[in-house]
Image: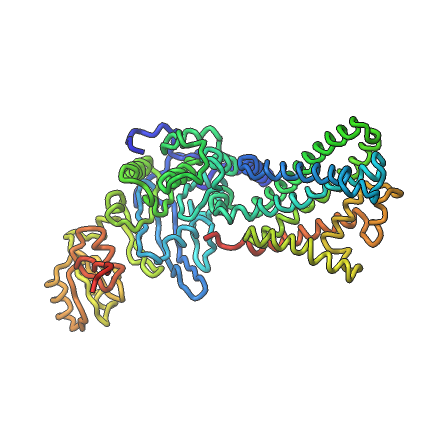
Length: 338
Length: 271
């Protein structure tokens, strides 16, 4: 995992034989969530969520704990049935893909291993089930740096080794899309750096990477686009650069006339997106400009704050946490605090 | 991305079956189960043939047809091992959380269930054949030691083996059905043995007309498939279904459970 050399694994641009997919945000999405909704009992895990993932891009799927990220990824992969909406990969539900492992490779939390089975045999079982040549197993073990431990029982693996084994499993079918749920969990700094390089390299092949993460600093180093969710709903999506705004600052306004203000701000040429707790975020605007706009149109203001969205983390908090402005996060209570 | 030729359903079932076989042969528990079957069948058989019960004169004479039948009757432990194998084939996916990887590799769950049914039946067959071969070697050694005739031994072994093989395969399917409905491995095994060893016994003793339709009695009926009328085992035929009816009843239990599991557990979210 330490070396950032070109992988020695045969990776084709389109493993199912079609021409290399055109890449970039302007091209047809390879993953589409359309109005996805999922309830677990009375808990509304995912609520009318729609977003798209494009080829040639690394898309960060970000949100606080319990915001529905994992449930959404599992719906995309046919493991969880949505109550409403559609989860499409290449235009069809995952379960209808002719060769799913060649289309999508996924690293998910809570996917397990038989503790007594070796890593090599674990991959051989799944390669057989997916109709993949078993010779690829050894290639992938080499890629993720597990060749020396390949014959050991997985029960004795560290968390990081298991994570690398999961990545090898995801790559079995040489897929066009990688879906990674918290892929950096358990990896050491070298492993994380390698993973970051690998995702960029993978997207550079014209493929898509969708990565959920709660490590915003880590995600900010690798993602091109973000999909931010909060409370199971979409908070924002698009290229990171666009969401930050051209001036790098935004103004968050809490007002009873959100829709009217949004319309006026858009009319004035500002980028507008919904903020947390019913607020609206006006991108690329100064407080003076927003204040003047509201005064001219006699819009009542309950609160207004400047967001210096110079980092993905600040953007994330602005969109997902109504209690947080640009101030530093409150320190968790330590033992001994009075 | 979705373009390209996909494998047809039989081919998908075939590769899912190959994966199931690969799973069974790459963990130590499978050979351990086979070894347990051999040790129990041979050990209990020899204990019956040469142990204290024999010297008390209760059992048929040494070397007789009935005596060989009693020795080989210990082979029916394989039916319970087949049951356990069937349960493990399904519940192991949830116990070790390997269901996620499995359903990512093959998202068509009916295909997975079909492959598991074939794998469970095959595993039952392998256990039964392995134990049968061990009993063949044991029987040959007993004959070589001067106890009975080879022909008599082979006749009895053949009779017992055919019935045991059928019950073991059917129990493996029954176990798979239970494991499909009950994801928890320990609960599935406990329920199976509770029903077979306690509930069935109580019902058979008190309401024989109902008891003969239960799995234990149906299995006993199937085990009589190779038994010739006239030997000591015919007494057990009284009150039982015919061997073929017993097989249909056992197959029916397995099929109903698999169907229920296919519409409940297998449709459930994998979280």
